[in-house]
Image (cartoon, rainbow, N blue to C red):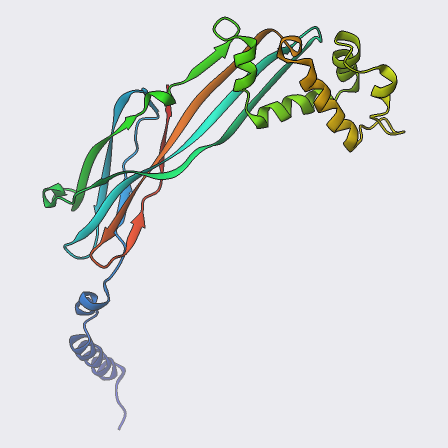
Length: 257
């Protein structure tokens, strides 16, 4: 006897329904539903004042009724911008450096509060403040507020190497500074720093850097010099739920003025 397609479909459908009743995947979530907290770091203001509080907001949701820990973390970068006139050389050095000032560190831990639950958002809504330390305020060092000695000492190692490299890259500029203006080295010795193709050797680079240091900041730096330091702070939020599963939000950043 032939079985109609409709009759066969009814049999299969009944089998599927019976399987779902005995093996309900939604019920299994109670056993298999362990998961990290979902954390949303609400966008923050892009610029903040130093020596002041900045508000931030976190929305999160997790499986289970327990939050073991929640904490805010920060990571800080510094930008150094240089504008330095080299004395009697018709040359001004300009460059910008971005570098890690302080690696990620715990800023503060917070107690979990059930009253943070927001039924409209169907999530916990946590709000707090981050204090921006006064030391992260934007700073400008220049000829009218900083001596040459203090300014030279404030130059980072990366910047100083970059300054020297920019001078070494130009043979005529380096000769003018070391031989003509300051008589730190004789012309004949200066020429030994270069190979037959006119390229400075490794030993020549070392000798040139030592000679530039020997000049001293007063004879190297001209009458105009400026260094600007500015900071950028990255914040992230961590949550550990009742299953000891930790998750961290994406970072939000702001510049300090």
